[in-house]
Image (cartoon, rainbow over all chains, first blue to last red; front, side):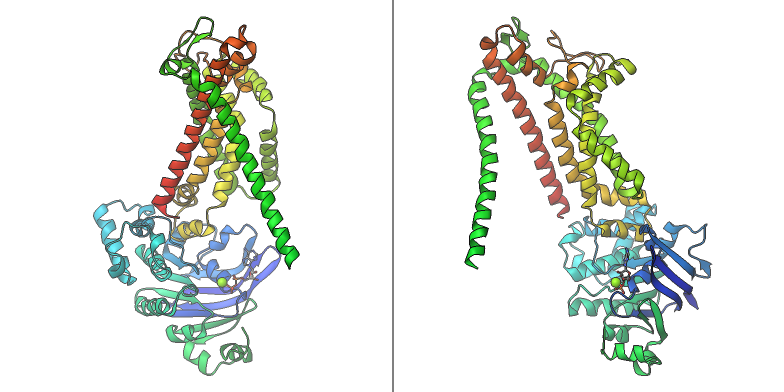
Length: 250
Length: 284
Ligand SMILES: Nc1ncnc2c1ncn2[C@@H]1O[C@H](COP(=O)(O)OP(=O)(O)O)[C@@H](O)[C@H]1O
Ligand SMILES: [Mg+2]
């Protein structure tokens, strides 16, 4: 089943066209990787899907994005609810300057969960799911800013998991991390796909090949090729894709 | 290469010298006032009313008056100023309208304080019939402080990383939730510093309170916000220029100045300590 479908999606920042008529089908409970040289519009594409581009005053889209078959940009769409159901992990870990506990409880509290016991349960579960529990269980009340970069990123993942979204968008989640931190997050993603639909932007080809089931290659705002990761990395249809994955540019 | 290094040394030298000059001026002022005013300071001076046509006694009502009026100023200008800053930095779309507001605010900040005083008379004393009172003076000082509060608060909001906002919104927070739980706390130290500096400047102003509520002499403390009051800067002004026996009350004038400065320093120090504590708590 396709969780998110884009139909002839174009994105404009003012007069500038960033994405050009993108047709994409994101299958449920899979990891889909979006690869492409930097500046090609990967982050912009991701931010269309949780409507974070709404924050950019000049931005505007054409075409459609369907989420569970419903138009994301329809008049009556509840943007806040959309963002609850489609979570996001950012390129640079962005924990809030609060305690580890409060970081994760944040999304729960704004969703009206006040019960202390319930909060603690979900915080613990989210930290366990993100593989951070053992490392932080004795410092839940220290500031999240004191964690290492990799821990912070897993905290941000835990924070996203806590409100049980259906989709998780990850924008180069490992680009600020060392190999050990990267490995942990890749492991985690593979585990999480049982439950979530994951879209990961990366410019690390090996990473896309390692973790993803499907891969889309984006170039200058156009989706050049999309297919099974195996196929994309072994027998790409397009010359451009081949050049990119063999490292001839990018 | 050598020339460059020389230039750099000279540059540093000039900058260092400027810093030292500023510090020196401050020290001289504080030293001079302390030297001349310390003799007048006593417990009695702080807790007694002026007596014998202000040649004896203390400045208690002026201290209380200044604190009281500054409190009103804070109550009025901080909520309003911070709200305006939230609107400007978080909600308003950049455009001709916001540019116009910003230019107006900057111009307001440049208006001489005596003009605020006259405006206060027209609006609060007469227009709203608050009379010459703590309330009228506090609101007038509030107007004077408002542009400063808005500007410093907006500055503080600008320094909050966009990722705090996006992080909250991406979790399904409404805009207001992200502002209240993420933006405001991060901007708080900046708002606090700006607010307190603004208030301590307001506390030292004479012109805006001159026609709106300050009294030459009152044998009692103000009993409500609609009462007149005495204030340190005005008392100082009277003692140093309007008194019939200026030479005789000179030490009292210096004593008053010393108390005013000490008060302002204390307030600023509180701001620094609060800010430091807050920073540490959130370790940003
Ligand atoms: N807020 C913005 N306003 C205008 N242009 C932007 C904005 N953000 C990104 N862009 C432009 O959009 C293009 C795609 O950027 P982005 O989606 O960040 O690429 P990627 O994530 O693939 O590196 C770039 O040319 C970038 O300059
Ligand atoms: Mg990017």
